[in-house]
Length: 177
Image 1 (cartoon, one colour):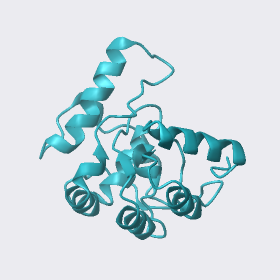
Image 2 (cartoon, one colour):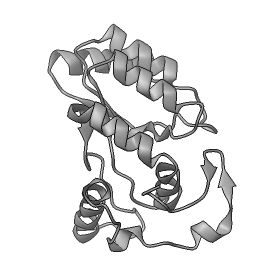
Image 3 (spheres, rainbow, N blue to C red):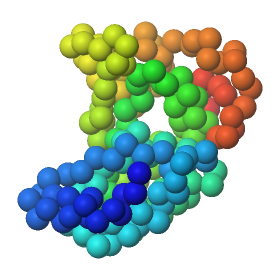
């Protein structure tokens, strides 16, 4: 969708004036339907008081988009990053985050005041309920808390046997490399 549509620009203006954050579910990585990097640069420039949250780091873990995320974080102090990775596609995003574990750690340390742990936690819509929400929240915070991944949510699944590589690199579950 067009993040700079006139109706959304008005939403951003109102949200900024009332100090209400805006969370966006967008996929800025390779294979996405739109290149959102320009939008993510222009929206905070037009609305410097707007607190804008990228759900799931914007899912920009590929080589082409990771440097742009860093640049955006450097240039826009009100751009925030949500860490939640849970739900129906968690294996894909855990694999992609694993391929960038060292860079994600450096990013979190560098922009620590703009990292939101579990702010976009969602339960998988197939079995959603309060218990799953709490499990998802625990999984999201555990992702960055522990040196070893012992949560049930982080168990290896069949996804990792289905392919060797995707657009972001090797399909592995090795968050500590």
